[in-house]
Length: 53
Image 1: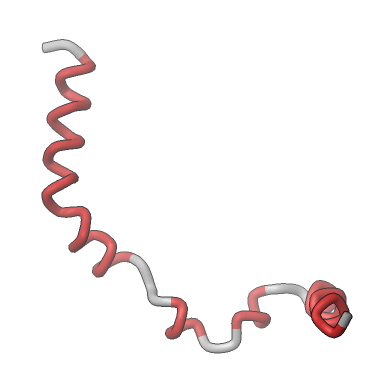
Image 2 (image 1 turned 90 degrees about the vertical axis):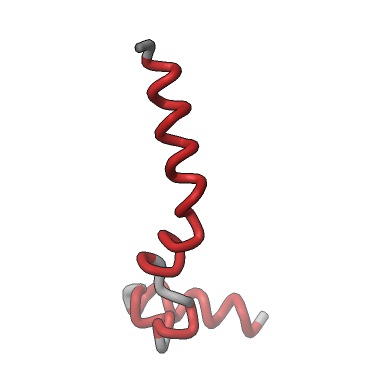
């Protein structure tokens, strides 16, 4: 079996389940809390100054 056919079969299999993968493995943005916590303080200050301008 050629590599191209194997890839196609894998993609067809994943296509059937992609919605459940998204629901199971991705966290909604609303569940992150404060998004600025992810960035260093200096980046927060620069970001907030840009927002004010």
